[in-house]
Length: 309
Image 1 (cartoon, rainbow, N blue to C red):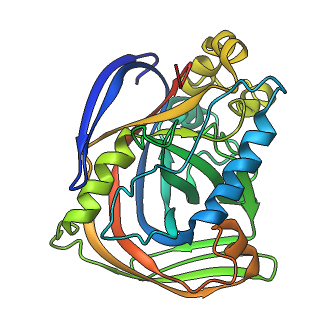
Image 2 (tube, rainbow, N blue to C red):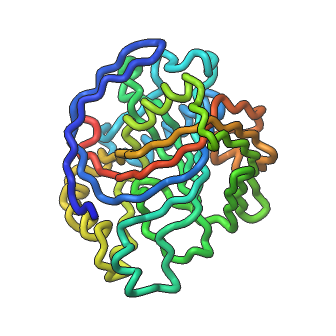
């Protein structure tokens, strides 16, 4: 089981629009798991994205103008998918299996702790540090999980975790409910045999894997304060504490995905009520899903500090 790893990367990403070179960077890996889910990209007005970015910058501001900067790129990354007025939000339904607690929980089952389960992620992808820079950043808006799971380690440690009443996920449907609010999608997977996503989705994957995800000003490792589990997650959380204090809020997550298996999938939103419309920044606008796919793979989540240099 992986305890500590530093990764040196130099990324060059090409789309039909342009070629971006991403500076080499060090990433300190913290936790590992497996993801099996379906993701889709939904068109959202750029003005609503900008409002969310303004709120994010205000929330992390120290009054001196320091901290990371996230902006909408000047050039549209995928003109095939966007109009001049739109960017998009990415939503993932799926099952996350954490591998960091296996050894401990096998001998010490804990009825009030669930380290694996269904989750829904919401992010704004393809953001830049300046208008002409490479779109290699994302802003995490939420990580939804069922509150019936009890206490959970927040393995996506810079995502704002939000408990909901119910999450369902199958080969044909995804549902999340919170009070009277509901997001319900239909799913048609092409997994057997797997049909590769259309080319635009493959290009998006190159960016998504390369992206650095901002979210909370500091990682949420509070699970480790509440429990004495001897796990890789908590050992690594303790190890990076000094770096967190030194560099926050200029911290971001980075994913390393092995054995990826992207397959074509068709997702349609059957119902989305006001609470989830607000969460995905859709408001009262019509639903327009730009692309979708099913995806599985082993992931390692790391912390980059400082994220923007």
